[in-house]
Length: 79
Image (cartoon, rainbow, N blue to C red):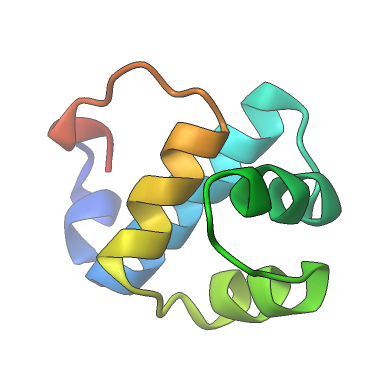
């Protein structure tokens, strides 16, 4: 973890990680909303965009998004 990463807030770290996973999976906010619905979460493209721009979201959203993106594992050092 770089010195800059240590200085980022937890909100910034979580949103950067989730955005990177979305980019890696080539998934848009709209596509993520569709996938989350399959897992029982009612989100819209706009609500996801707002959460990620603020960087504040529940752990349940974070975990559900990782499942929806089919992330198989994460290393805490990467967040």
